Image (tube, rainbow, N blue to C red):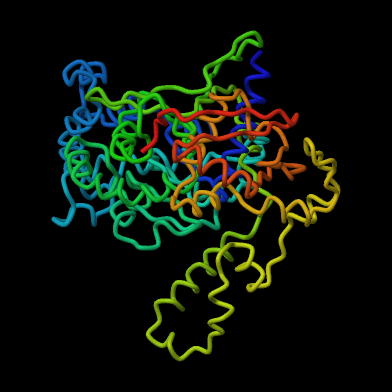
Length: 481
């Protein structure tokens, strides 16, 4: 049963990637560092900080009890202890002399100790001897659009050396932060310890600016599949960010936000006769909830493999291309460029742009060896014929309907399934085709666009199933705006 659950969930994740027509965003939490470099969880880090300071006489349990389990308040409580200890040891080389300047806050010594803890952990990281070597090797081959993390360590930089790193407030300020090929470290980094967010004061300041961060990340949540790895569903940081965007990405609490995936790791092996839930409700506080896709695993190999895409274009190249196109458009001298406006006006989709840039599509090559059978239409052997009949991704359909995001179209597809028990994506039919061989390549027809338009407009509609059965549906109120 678990094997079946995993196969279906992975297939659904692959379909989400294909429907979006974009690369995934990886949202990485502390569980990632715990797994691969034996990093501490939050309480474990605070415990280490207490034990590494010989002037702190009370154990972590004392601070945990005194502050009611509030970790930022515990960190704040030991900030002063670290400042006193640092000044006692000034001149001994325990801390760099420049940290004693007035430009640094009193928390710098605690944060510098955090830097030393994680740098020591990373110095011991050896891929060849790592127990999760096979898993990490797969991970390194991925080319996500971006990686967002609340981790302080530099493991991600080690695994994704082609990605550019943006730390702390620069995530909000830097216009390049949403470009392809970036690691966004929203809680700071050991490379710049003064920006680490750990104490109550740090979180209060972060809270004031979180709305700006959420607004910036909204583009990601609207356009890309988001995969959370290494977080707990009860993680307060994630709950707060999701709370800021949930009203836009989710119209009702019962509706699954299709592009958000929460992958949770279970240390113990998962019994074969156990079937975990396929989605979960994450409480966001003040009676607010959000329902997302959920996947429980004991190893991440299948998850990482599912995130592989046929386009393995070099991240450095794509990042440079994106920046060059931006600079050309922004340039004051752009009016002096000789541009064939007739051809430029023809740029309506990625295939046309790719052709002008000299890229070759792999769709025909991949589909050329696959025989496609359509109910009532016999066999389509020519991939070009198939692409002509099914020219659109789900994002293209959404665009034609005036939406910037494919979620509403997916809701309509689910509505058809509820009304007729016919799963459009579940087979090749007059509305949909899967042309993929090693992965999903879902495409949609003009018939699909016509059908979905009627469903969204709450009109009567008729579907023709893959067995040529005709099912009529009379208008009912659609739970759509």
